[in-house]
Image 1 (cartoon, rainbow, N blue to C red):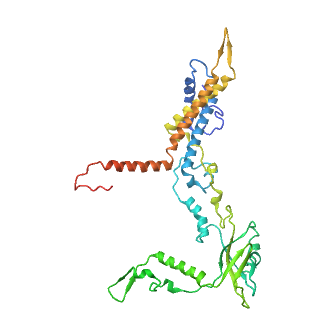
Image 2: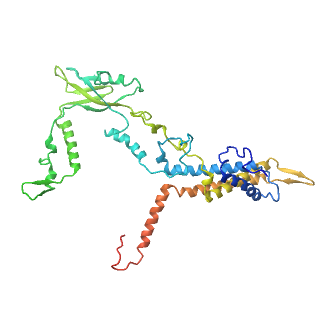
Length: 394
């Protein structure tokens, strides 16, 4: 009798052919499927290779469904990681518990940091416009130059796609020193009277000041310089910048600007290899599960699914002949019923598995643990505690 191990090309894809646990399961499944389909009474028109192919398909289906729910639970942790396993194939992460990280969150926040001028993935450039006496309007694209005297718009377009300039900041005022805003003994520092206390020597006074006060005063200083103390202003319309008031000096100074170009999401300013990494469900490096590592719960599901596939396949075979003539009558085959039953069984098995996995995603487990902790706390409130012998919080 030919066994799975000594049969050439027993399954269509051969994913599990070298797995000894799968080999043993395949041989046993022949007896299981044929007896379930009534082979002892009426011959089952299925070959061994057909049943083994159904076993392989059932194993792959089980592996696919579990990987889908693993991805659903932890796709955020996989985003950006290499799309291939250590062997160069799409595998390596299945059946593993990834460590949580905040990479997705920090990358999601990068554009906000960039707009606030505190980080991001793209560079800003600084340039200057040489002002001319009695000239109020300047074309930014034709006059903004870098430190070498080259036009920023044309020189930066050599390798990058042509895009519109974005003005991030115009230094239109002369900075002025105002250290008294940061002097903790100044009358402007109104909090010093609220948080002061005397030391052992009467002439020494200490001030307890929160850090945010310095930050607020720094913003106050900057706003004051820009609005109250500045006699200069500007207006940008299209590609032109108009200065107020009109430059009247014989040798006007330069006007400095900080600019950037529109961001290319696939080409940040630094070499980011994670852009070529995992981006969605299709390229997560999940391979098939090893059959030898599937527990009894999974193997029983695979057996039942393989039986459903075999039932459907047998029904399709028998449907080719509606009836078979026999002496004195016709033998009607149950092909249609088998196809219907097999498909219904497959649907039921998949529904049961997915509903169970839906309750076991990582988010659901967190909710379950929180509910359990809350219920335990409620139960403990009814546990009698000896007076004076225990302290119970809650």
